[in-house]
Length: 312
Ligand code: NCD
Image (cartoon, rainbow, N blue to C red; front, side, top):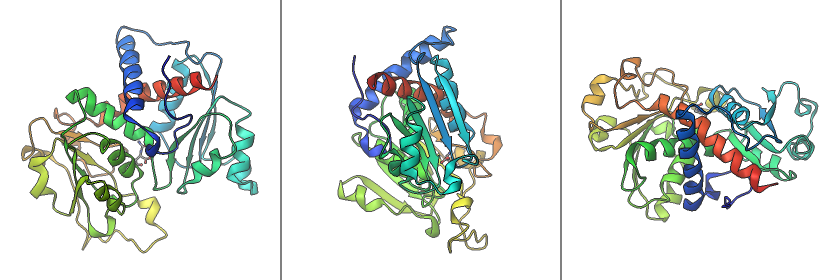
């Protein structure tokens, strides 16, 4: 049996192409069995998932939990962290140590950058980062790139536009990081100047082609993928960043804009959307965001299965 190169997934920086191959291979298998009517597997029948969410979540929490149920395992959940000892002042690393004695894999979402790494320091079971503040969301990005691979059959030589709040959106870094592992991918980052991606240098140093602009209309015709994100209002409430409607570039994806794009453009979004993609676009063949939602369960099923079988 082949194993992943990491024992818990805290950052997209841990992921190698061989890991992606392994996860995708297993995901293909789960999807094909699911299509034939299978709903239950035994891969985690003796395992417990601890799901710890200190920030709102619909898709991520449900898809991890559904994945574990389908794998035959059990789930215990802490939603919104309201009933936890963090409220009493317990440190993240103590909490990690304690919680790891209750289960076999931990899914953790927390509002601060690097918090999940801190939490995982004293754990002895796999920990998966389900979003650490504005920093990373590696399993969303695995889902995103799987959806591209499924649609296009490969992950090379793509022209990728990413638009919206690139400063506070945690899927952005993880997505660019994973796609930059593959040859020939070019990135156009489109945002208002207050919401620019601030980690470009890291990629430019590696000679990854990446440009920043505020003009979506100018570039739309070039893209194979357009990845749209919402303004992360909850993250800049306490900063000087304000949604100033008078000055801010407002990006709205509608049918008219899509007519200027390639016929086989993939329009993606990690969801939830607010108003950045008009619902008139939902039934166009370019809209792939609900496909991302479907794939997320199978990607997480694969990851949980691979990580827990390696840690037996
Ligand atoms: C994303 C998140 O939580 O970062 N949602 C998700 O997990 N699918 C995107 C977002 O909240 O904007």
